Length: 346
Ligand SMILES: Cc1cc2nc3c(=O)[nH]c(=O)nc-3n(C[C@H](O)[C@H](O)[C@H](O)COP(=O)(O)OP(=O)(O)OC[C@H]3O[C@@H](n4cnc5c(N)ncnc54)[C@H](O)[C@@H]3O)c2cc1C
Image (cartoon, rainbow, N blue to C red; front, side, top):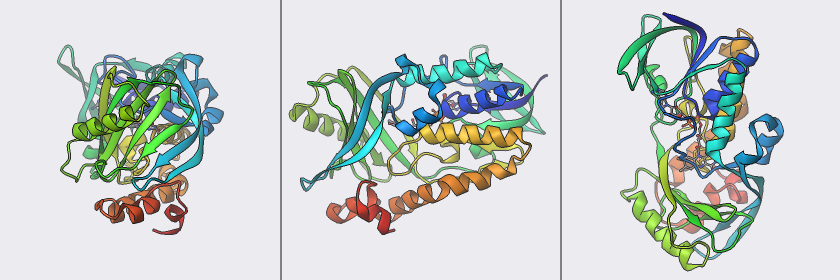
C-alpha cells in the first residue's frame, strides 16, 4: 500500500499551494485530481488582487497574467456608477494553476491525475484511477480536502456548504480595450451580479445568481450579453463558455481528526463577491504551516481569526438581504463592498 505523510485531494490553487508548502518542508505528499490536466477547464472570471502577487511572486509567470487592472466600476439599476480601487490581475487561470502544481512537483509532490477520492475506511483513504476503473488504498497521516465547492471530503467529515451562487460565463471579444473590472447589478441577476473582466482583446462576461431563485443562469447570461453588446462593450460572439458553483455559507468546521479543509472545500470563498482564489492559496499555505509544525488544531483558530469575520459578514448579508431582490436601491448598497453601508449595516 502507498504510504504518504499528506494526501491532498484536489489540484486547484488551494491543494497545489498546500502540497507545494509541505513538499518544501520535506513532507512526502501525494496530490490527486479527477481532471486529465490541472487547470483545465477553467471555471472562473480570473481576477486576483495585487496583494496576492506581492505574497506569492513565484506563482505568477508572465504567461499567467492576461491583464493588469486598477479599479472595479459598478453600475446600479438606478443609473449610479461608482468606482473602487481594486488593483490586480486578470489571469490566464489555466497557466496559473498549472504553474503552482509544477512548483509543487519540483519540490517533490507526486501528482496522480484522473484519480478521484472515494472515501475513508478504517484509517485508510480509497482512491480510484478513473481510466482503469481501479480502486486502491492509501495510508496518509493527514488528508487535505481541497476538492472545491462541492467537496466530497467535506461531506464525508460531516460538513457541507448549503448555499451557493450558480454562474454562467462566456468569453467574448472586446470592441475596445477596457482598463477596469466592470460589475452590473440588475433585476434579472437576482442575489448576485453580472461582470465583464477584461483580458486584453477579450473579456470574461458572466452572471452569478443565488440558486434559490427560479431563474436559469443561461437565460440571465443571455440578457446580460444583450445588454453589454448593445452598449458596444463586447462583440456578440461567444468564444468559450463555462460556469460553476460558488460556495456562499462562509467557513465550515475545518478540521476533523486528521482531515483538514482548505479553499472552496472549507468555505473560504467570499459569499458575495465570489472571490476565492486568494483565500484558497492563503488557506492552503496556512494549513501546510500548521501541519508542518505539528499543530494542525491551530489552523482552525487562525483561519477564523483572519477570514472568519469577513466571510461571516458576507454570508449574513446574503441570508438577510439577497434572498429577496425587490427594493434594489436599499439592498445593493447594503450588500456590495464598494458602498459605505456595506461596512456599517449588518
Ligand atoms: C464562474 C466563476 C467565476 C469566478 N471568478 C473568480 C474570480 O474572478 N476571482 C476569484 O478569486 N475567484 C473566482 N471564482 C472562485 C474561484 O474559482 C474558486 O474560489 C477557486 O477556484 C477555489 O480554489 P480551490 O483550489 O479551493 O478549488 P478548485 O479550483 O475548485 O479546485 C478543486 C479541484 O478538486 C478536484 N476534485 C473535485 N472533486 C474531486 C475528487 N472527488 N477527487 C479528486 N479531485 C477532485 C477538481 O477537479 C479541481 O481541480 C469564480 C468561480 C466561478 C465558478
